[in-house]
Image (tube, rainbow, N blue to C red; front, side, top):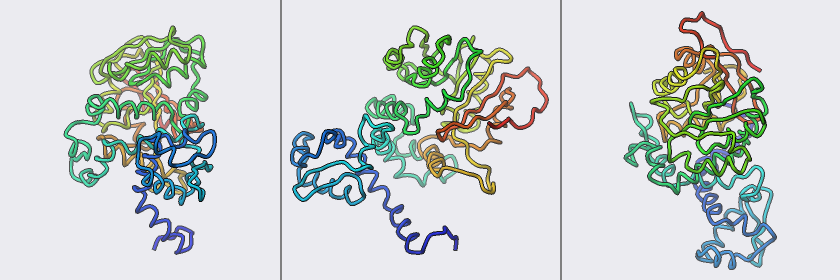
Length: 359
């Protein structure tokens, strides 16, 4: 038997909780959808009032609140008044960090349906999302703008404060133009431009993805220093940048497609231009004492469920980069679970540069 260091009773309780975790996910997702945390932000309120505001059945909402309170999410008194606990406070939209959008994203219909068919991922070439929903993930989001908006909000309000964390460690003093390839709504590029007043940016993604980026850039006060271009990074990437960023892009794709994206970037870059890859990095298989956030493995499973992608180890990223014509330079830790892998566009023929420097 594998020892976890806990007592048998504690291990049993933990396993029981994990087995039924999907039920809590649904309950938390519904609480977020109904904005319960925001409705009681100013103080306790009667569940009957909340039910009327939300347009749901009072007794059902009372039972939901009671169940969540049993797990320390909200508190419910004998008079039927709902109030906050430390846990439920993170569900407020204005919490910092906020888990409101995370609770909603993980339970949207597309994700829920795909995870219900997880077994397809274990079959050769199987993709659960495509098996049950009949189309690739990003095409589905294009056709379901409501769910795409929830993903967009989840990425913009990342609980790990990814954009700020990357901005803190990424030196751009020598750069003039940063191209954010697959940059979505522009959240990361906005943070980088705000922190580097002399920098210009180019946001590049498919047209329906960048449609809301102007508002994000305007809100950050950097819209005048950023161009927005639409296109497909599997076909072409804009030229002229000093720094090219791929933030949580490569993990969406298998090695073949990820390599294609990297080669398109390399074709657009002058020799010596810098590539910045922002991703979670898994420990090498069998690595002794390697620190890993269990959430990294859940993200890896999500990539396997909704896409054909994967989280990768350091050696796997180094190999992908070298095969696409890049010299790996260094890997920077951030205060988020994500790391910054920096590489340089190499000449046509390069010698083995060895492993990247870790900072």
